[in-house]
Amino acid sequence: MRRAVLLARPLQYPPHHNTRHLTSFHRNDRVLLRPTKRNRNTTYASPILTQPLHPSHHLDTPRGRIRHDEIIGKGVRDIVRTGATGGKKSRDGGGNGNGNASASGLEYRLHEVRLEEYVRFTRRLVTPLYPQDAQVIVGLMDLHPQPAQWGEDQGERLEVLEAGTGHGALTLYLSRAVHAANPALPRHLRFVREGEESEGQEEADHTAMEAWKSTRRAIVHSVEISPRYSAQAEKIVRGFRHGMYTHNVDFHVNSVTPFVQSRMDSLSDQPFLSHAFLDLPGTEQHLAAVSSALKTDGSLIVFCPSITQIMACLSTVKEDGLPLELEKVVELGVNGGTGGREWDVRAVRPRANQKADAGIETKASVVGEEEDSASGGGAESETREDSGVDVRKGEEKVEQGSKAAEPDDGGGGGGWKMVCRPKVGELVVGGGFLGVFRKQRRDVAE
Image 1: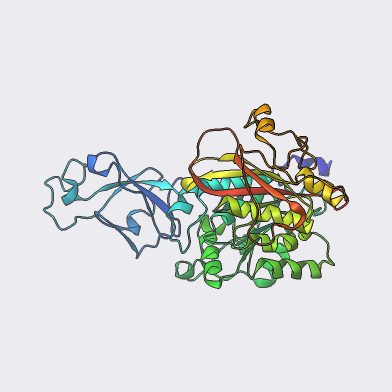
Image 2 (image 1 turned 30 degrees about the horizontal axis):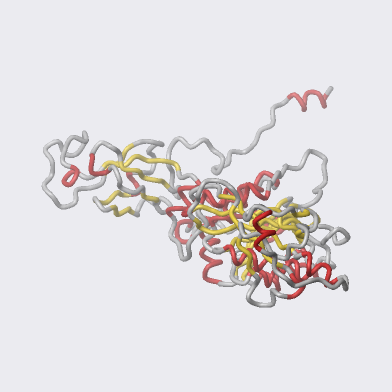
């Protein structure tokens, strides 16, 4: 009977400033200010992202100054006005918006900051991955984190690797994607220091924080070789909505290969990564280490500015016999414009090379014009998808309808040729390429 009474009581959860329904702005909140359309001269004016609100601080805009204490206490979509810019003051005092904007100031409407806007408007040391691109990457990982159920043990941990960290934009999107898997942070650990803005707040107890971290079911490992960029990215992550996504991320200043090898040594060479993302120079040099740390069927996504770098990664996979399968190649749009156009990138071995490896003598002649004409010139060759071997009888070249290239350094070994061409679709001006690899079992790797 007592148990039934306990179960009938509604659960009381403590309020959390990160999950509250925002109706008004408070100290340490960040606010996005958008110029109203009341004046035609503000049609193309850019939004402004404030620093964490503090009563003694102010915001300087191109049309005047706004004090933070004029924002604190106001609600979402309320309007504030800049102070006079030194011109003649309007007769109505600037209170009704009918005066001259240059004299009475400019109106701004207050908005809660969304993640997309925060990534775009925060101060940057390096070019960030734009929001549309970050969402494509997170979508390709197909993350489905679930919170622990009552009475259930921790279970298998979801660990995602990001290298390098850069601006921290993708770090935020990854952390948001896995956030639901982790238990709620204890109330006394929820306050996150934001430099001088959190002066007076107590520091989180280190022992209690480490104890909570040991219960996490999802972790984002963000590796950056530059201490300056890593520190700035951590500051960016902490600055979004009072750091609500900070504690899902472990920041590391290191090169990705030594980091992975160190983790593997501590885990007795057991794979620990569910997914990995690489955005750094010389990506192909780190594929062996990262693939060894990936669990079976885990995804490895590489971001490269040019398609030839994707081809270099594929060549390394083939030549070194890494247990990775190239699933797809996607071209991203400029400034995160679209989800991208898919490319056909394959490593093929001509039939002549296959016979040579088997010790069968073949003719090294090139296909004649008659045979090329008979086959339709630009007709696509039949290809065995399971092995990537061109099986058109007697043909020893990659079809002319696609570009064929060999890597400049060491790409000739094994007789692999690279097929690279855009798949049929709408034109997308390139902003980079994503190569999506999938971890295979060693016994089925090609």
